[in-house]
Length: 162
Image (cartoon, rainbow, N blue to C red):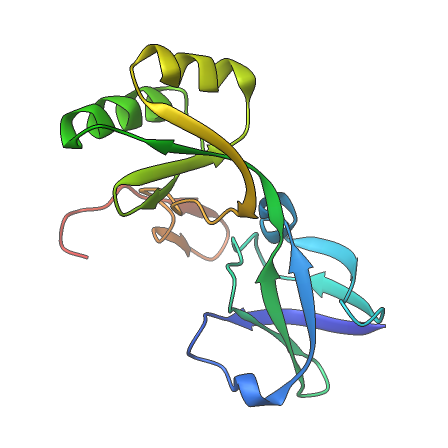
């Protein structure tokens, strides 16, 4: 079984050296350690130092020097369209207040399909369309603030100087 213990973000790894691809939904791309099956049927163990939030286009570095390209699987999504920027901001606030992962696109939002949340969004006057598409939500405000202090690891709030 091939093993990947590190990864690089899209554009920072040699994509021409990819020996396989793996198509994963959002939850699987958020795991630190997991045994997977690549798109060609080969076995892959992902064993990262910490959960990384892999995104489409990232590359998993194999111990033998090869790479596996990450693809985002189609998922059950609600795409939310609003009449104007004010309504979009209001809907985004309500989604954030519920700590939901949200993908921000020009003039619209995507969430995992949930009939209760779609009802709330509709009640706010927005239109929600159910579809199957890759889900690439925002990483979150604190996603880049994790670092190691030797015996312990923790995240800090952004200081505004990053």
